[in-house]
Length: 291
Image 1 (cartoon, one colour):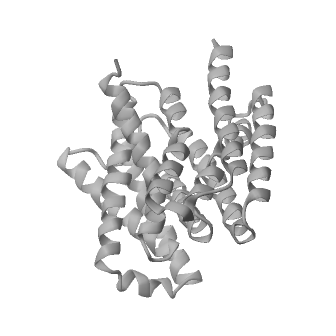
Image 2 (spheres, helix red, strand yellow):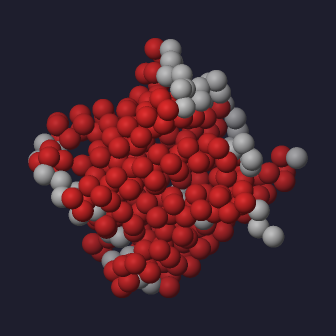
């Protein structure tokens, strides 16, 4: 029988898989969309911490590091939704799976360890799958694929940087200051590079505001707090192994909701499936060999 914890875990991954759908439900461009996402998430986590009477204190060095990582998170989400706008949800989610490849490269650099043979094999398989996806996709989707690859690199980068944070900083506190860092970074990018997006922020429609509130509250703030709580019951490895199901959930949901615009060639689904399977098997084998 499936345990309550496993059901909660699958529900959490389903929530994360659904975030890509908002890239089409929200009709505004990617930058103001993510600006609202981090703002709403920061406000929700702030009031959650106030209600729970949690401590907000961090050192100056910790604060600067959290804000910087938050800036990377904000740009990661921006590139994720930009990839969706330039291609489709399926493309963005499939390229996001490359995060495991970039983690395999970044972790030895940050933690001064040798690259594992399994990680080299993973790198070859994932790179080959992405090359197949790129060649099998329509010409007008290829910029979206490139942006998606950048998105997956940023995903791996902030994950590795988060793992270097002191364990004494509570995850809710990490989330709050990273969302603030994302908000500051995206605000600067908007003012300097895309000032026309300010008009979208000011003249947001009620439907977009509704979708973004849902995205910020349930699919960002709640999902983060739930993931932190689940780590009391499951290992970080179990959580990350299940997170690899996110693209599968997301691609299925996108196909069900948006139909033909999300349907890809059989080659795309085969390459994505091989890539996801190799990532999951890599995680399982590394755990067995480390025992």
